[in-house]
Image: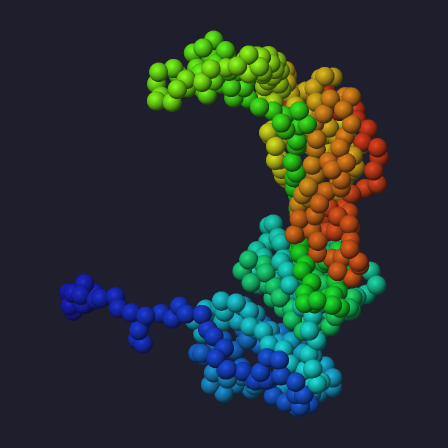
Amino acid sequence: MACVAALGLACARIVPPKGGPADEQAPLIVAHAPDSGAVRIEHDGPLWLEFSEKMNRSSVRDWLLIAPWPGKLSCQWEGTRVTCAPEQGWAEQTTYTVVLGTQATDRRRNQFAAPFELSFTTGDSLPTGQVTGEVRTRALKPGGLTVCLLPWPGELPGLEGREGPDTQEALRIGQTNATGQFTMRHVPRATAFLLGALWDRNGNRHFDERDDIWGFADGPVSCPQTGDGIQEVVLYVVYADEPGDIGGEVSDTLCAQFVPPPAIRARLDSLQRILTGELDAMGFEPGTDSIPEAQLTPAEEESVGVQVAALEKDLARACTDSLRCSAAIWVAAHAEGDTTAADEVRTQGAYEISGLDSGLYRLQAFRDINGNGRRDEQEPHDTFPSLVELLPGRRVEGVDLELREESEPRSDSSAAEPEPSAAQSDSAAAEPEPSAAQSDSAVVAPKHGGAESNDDNSAMGKDREAREER
């Protein structure tokens, strides 16, 4: 008997489970009511969703989001259709948003590829405003976050993200896709709202102070009264201790128009050969072309001589300038009140200093012509004329610096405050034409005159030398 059993095991074959290969297709909603954009929905009108396959019913219950929250829902399943209705009915003259999050799954635990959304109203028309944007994260994943549009409370909740409302207080609700993009439709225009994205750690759809994180716009959000009514916003959902980045461009007033010596030398050699007769007036070698040789007139010969003299001076200057323009540029970020650089980078133009703690920073740059790793008195340099505030997990762009000699004035353009990136213009929708200093992460402290400290620059080089020795 043991031999028969062993033989049976040896002959066993692995086959797919009954019913064919495993289901790996994402579920779909193939029909629903009301239609998205429907108006004059009855007080007791049903809300139903028809799925392409049998669903994990508890996941649908957990991730069916409705705003404004209508109160307790009564839901019944029939095959692949779920029908829900609020026990107290839909409120009069109210626009509702219904979202089924991507966390809803079928029985094989396949998730929705993208959040499903529909809107309807018990009134006669839907608002025409729209809020669209992106949620940015660092340690957290940007997909599947709940985005809420709430009444403006008069001031922002705590900046640490550990204070905030419950999602059931939302007037509109949405969810980010895999890359953090979101859109909220049918938003009233010219009305101030609080916009936030919630990282809901345990997925219970409620804000838990110990575990969850809110990321709010930096001020009230409002869809414009005129035009397309679209307000674009960027939100950050980050831990309070996550680092940020500062970036920009470093320009050099002398090197901006620098011509390398080889280019000048090539032009100079050509003109000198014309003067010596190696080339004719047209720049051709004599006898190598069917065109008759062109001879210089006395006036032309004098003109070429003047050009040669000028190019010789340009060449001498270019050889000197090449030492300056080929030297490395160092950019350092100093925390407010600190003479030692928090970090520094080497560049020839664009720069980015990453991994900085939140706080106020003074940005300095210099061209290290003698290669000793610290700024000497005659080396071109610049200090950004205002402190730059870096919030947790943010990126401040447009902190541009312009290298110049001690006697050169700073141009107006480089003295401007940092320009916010698309990620930094998120919150001033309710305010007319905000400056860069009012936008998300490019907040700049009042200008302090751009005063510099030679001790800071020396410390910048000494700090680097110490690290290199280690």
